[in-house]
Length: 407
Ligand code: NIG
Image 1 (cartoon, rainbow, N blue to C red):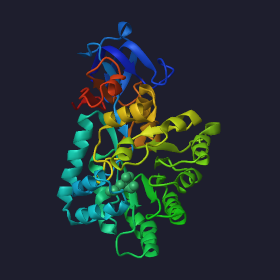
Image 2 (tube, protein in one colour):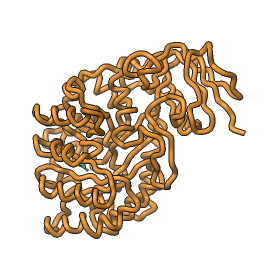
Image 3 (cartoon, helix red, strand yellow):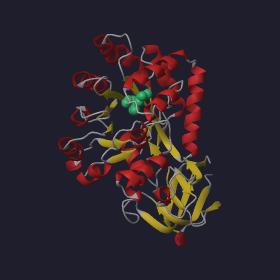
Image 4 (cartoon, rainbow, N blue to C red):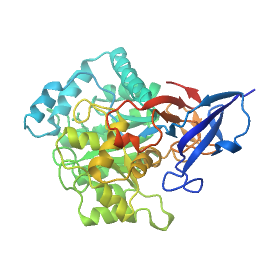
């Protein structure tokens, strides 16, 4: 028989269901949550909580949904400390460093790639991340992209094919595009749920990116775009026109880009999420993405870590949330929502029945509401506001993923 767990005396519960509680986070003070199996069974005021088999006393601390990190690149080997040092000494980021990681990744045995992935996913989970997407994109041959996708699928909740990351050094761009949209996609498609393209000067232009997105759709795969990262470009408009789930980075936007992102959600349409990557903006010394402007215009926002060895070597969603609040002008509750439910929407996991790479169907994530997957993050603080009020402090007290305590 399924045992019920009661977590009570929660000082502040963020449900992310505005109908359940106050504000964008649907917050309830002095609350309780009941978990049965891998699902949330009940939420409400502590005084009305039903009986359960086990009890955890939250002792007045804050409980929120586990982070949903919708953008990482964890299938890699090697290290780029020297490149980071040079950047902090004034050198500009150029995507050329990707080839350094490609060489290291190709040279690494499967076991080393898997061990590195598990190490990084473990770090993320201990920091409160209960859903994590990761991308291929440092293999860039059919064999290396295929093994990246297969290995990623063992531990990530979602795997995205990023064969269109850069054209590998010494390769003809037209021939590589034909490979990525043809045999490489064919090989990788059974192991991924989405296809991504780095639409940027020096990577893939608008026409090539459009081909990548069209080939993905022809295989029944969702799409995402790395867009407007290093300068203004066609990425955002392309993502919206192709119905991509998300466009990520979005650092350089004009009014038409902001309007397109906001407009993609009108009349009940499934739009394109604008995913901001604050740790990456800082680590590349790029302007911070205009998250406030996007929200004010009506866009749907996600915050993700972009954990990778080149532009953002951190999976700390707490750091990203604190940066979004302190430097991008979001309120704490807007930032927490974007890093939980926003990420779930960006991944299409905000609805029941999404399947992980192992084929298992799951309940929706990013909310604490009856029927949702029981992904819970207990803070060592009385309110989510402490994530920005006490930046950099180790505030994760406990984490449950699908009802199982993992920290
Ligand atoms: O999202 N923009 C492209 N890809 C990664 C960085 C890759 C790298 O420099 O290794 C990103 O920032």
